[in-house]
Image 1 (cartoon, rainbow, N blue to C red):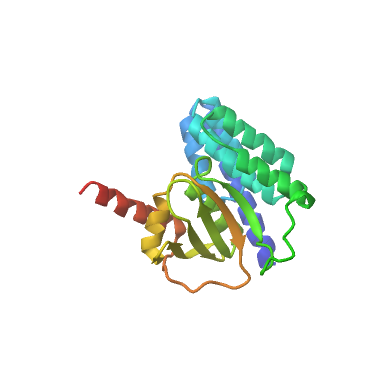
Image 2: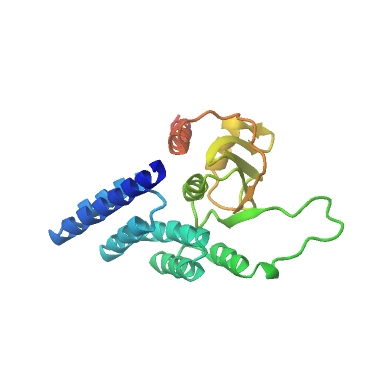
Amino acid sequence: MKDSTADREHGEEIEAALLDAELFLKYNSPQRAAARLSEAILREPRSVRLRESLRGIAAANEQKEEAARQCLALASLYIEREDFDAAQERLLEARRLDPRLSVAKGLEAIRRARRPDLAPAPTASAPHAPRRTTFAGDLSAVSIFDAVQVIENARLTGSLNIEGGRGDACKVLFNDGRIVGAEAGTQTANDALRRVLERTDGAFEFERAAQEFPVTIQAHSNTNLLLDTLRELDEESQK
């Protein structure tokens, strides 16, 4: 009974936000409509309806960066739901909105999900089982914030591995969607996370883990942790 009540409350909250946004649009106030939807998305980040509505408003009002950001988030949600046609459509729309974006990794992730038989098979001499990659992308197209949000929303346990680009290989460790550690070269914990957040390029992939990781980073919120770390880096750069 509790679960059904919670689901109904979530549905009512989403409906209320959508109705409020529609009302704001009726009175020619798209900024307030977008703000209302953004507020609701903070509480319901996995709502496709909220994100689709915000995407449409942003695109209609020439807010191309916001529209592209919602397209990328929607693509990840659609991939999780195995709605690959919708995911591909949103990736291509993100590219049209911002031609600087590279969505090749996202399209490749869709291809692999649709046809797992086309993925390279492990060699007989491999000393370990194949990695369980959940999703992959490129930091030049998908920000570290968006990647973390997908992991947090899905409550995944595993490591976000980043390779290539300018910088050493590094990783961020998650338990049930919460950041609990990081590694970058010889650095670990918060020092390593700082190096991760300085990365703006390189390919990433999320590898699921069967066991939780030891906690070396204590944080109540991924968002607050990332913002506090970015603030520290900004303060250092101004010294």
